[in-house]
Length: 352
Ligand code: SAM
Image (tube, rainbow, N blue to C red; front, side, top):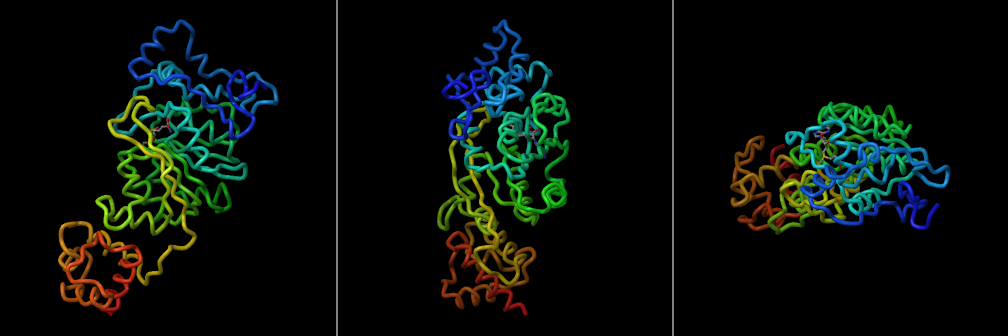
């Protein structure tokens, strides 16, 4: 194999060199033009099989490295006459460095079972198949299935499920396919349903080791926000109850086809085995948290009194706050997860 990787598909024989060489950033409009002006049959080029024998991890597999290149993404799209569907949040990743960062952050090992949400044309799926033991790729858009059948043809460790991730019983899938051992989730998420997907994964009680995902930058900032800031809210507290978030990279719109209208970030959530705080009634904790941020400008005592699903008077909330040494006029954004847990326990005791 050549220094720096396989000369054909640029797969390198070692994780640190993992392909993904992209020479030049080309804007989307230009990549369409370049693809159209190019005389060679790009559809074929994009899907060629690596001819190397043995020395390259991509040997015998579809032309892995090049799917990430904008021209080849366009070639695949043109070959199948694929129409992007805005309603499915389809922005395909075309930057090799970003893909590399996602794969590294997810820390994929040969014994891992990986669940990818929304494989698109299979760019990230190919990388996951190379490093994981087994991959399940859940794609809602039926028109992408024939494309995935071709781009993933060279891998025998992947199952493509044409399903809606919000309706999939992940717990049952992991039980069936991985004996209930923790799965790693990796995805460039459809932004229109980021929060329901993340909360469904965290609250669903499926065994999950980590969630490494591309999301809207603003959402990633909310997930890892600390008390006091403008980004801190119900999402920060819910995510941090179940996992430890770590920001991996910021990603500009020109790393996708088509370009999204917002900036993106890759974030990793390492799931806790047990929550970092103990609380008597988890459901009450999250009802209190949601009610506290429903009306951010109000004090906690005013926000929680008679809030939907909560039977507490203003006086009961103030008494609970005083018992915890907090001022009557404190706002939700000032409380840590631990303080919310204590407040929830005080309120639970008050209603007994
Ligand atoms: N992974 C690909 C990539 O990085 O190029 C595509 C990412 S694109 C941002 C999001 C993908 O999620 C699309 O393929 C879209 O069709 C799919 N998707 C959208 N909603 C979905 C849902 N509810 N369940 C499963 N897949 C979904």
